[in-house]
Amino acid sequence: MTASPRFTVVAPMLNEAENVARMAREIAEACDPIGPFEAIFVNDGSTDGTADAIAAMRVDFPWLRELRHAKPSGQSAAVRSGVMAASAPVVCTIDGDGQNPPSEIPKLVAALIAEDADPRLGLVAGQRIARQDTISKKFASRLANRLRRWLLKDDTRDTGCGLKAFRRAAFLELPFFDHIHRYLPALFRREGWEIMLVDVSHRGREAGNSKYTNFGRALVGLRDLLGVAWLCKRRKLAEVVHTDAPEGGA
Image 1 (tube, helix red, strand yellow):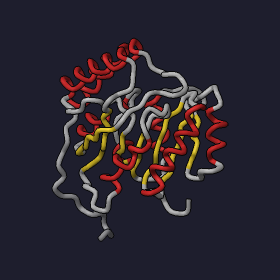
Image 2 (spheres, helix red, strand yellow):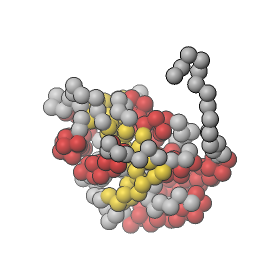
Image 3 (cartoon, one colour):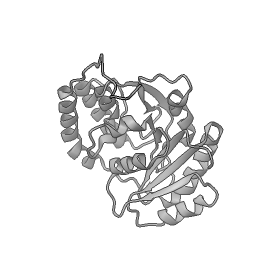
Image 4 (cartoon, helix red, strand yellow):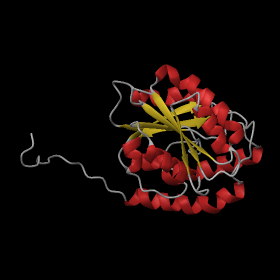
C-alpha cells in the first residue's frame, strides 16, 4: 500500500491453516471500503501449514503481513506482538479461527477512525449475540462473565469476544500479563478511558480445533480475576492542571 493505514487488524493464529484464506478474503471485503488498512496474522508457533497459507495469500493481498512466534505463547502474547508491530494508531483484534465475522470490523473501528472521534474513547468492545458454541462452553462463559462483572464492575457481558478495537498507544500503556485480552474493558477504564460496547454476530467453527478447554480456563480465570481486581483498586489517577513547557519551547 502507498497510503499509511488508518487501522491495523491483528489476528492471532495457532494451527489455523484451513482458516487463513477465508479470513484474508473476508477481511479484504470488509475493510477495503474504509481503508487504507493492514492486517497482521500472528502465527503463534504453528506446526501445520499456517505459514505457507499466509504466504500464499500475501501474493494477492499486499496489505497482509505475517508475524511468527518461535513457539506457542498464547493469545494475549500474540495480540501484544501484533499491536507492537502495527503501523496504524488504531488496532482491531479478531480471533483467527473464523468464528468472529470480519464483516463486523467496520462497526468497531468506525468511532475511533472518524474525523470527529471522541478523544476520550479508548476501546470499542464487541459482545457476541447468538453465540455459536457448545452448551458447556456457553454455560462456563456465562458463569465467568457474571463473576467478573460483579467483581470488576466493568458493565460488560462478554469480555471473551475477540473483536475489539482500541487506540494502539493506550493498549501499550496497560500492564501486560497473560490473558490480558479478557480484561480490556476494566483495564481501559482503570486508565481513565471511555469504552463503547457493540453487539456483534458469531458463527460456528468450520475448520481446525479449539485451543481452549473449560477446565483450563477455570484454572487461571480466578487468579487472573483477583489480580485485575487488585490492579483496578490500587490505581489512582491524577488530574494535571498545569505543566510548564521546556525552555526554548513554544
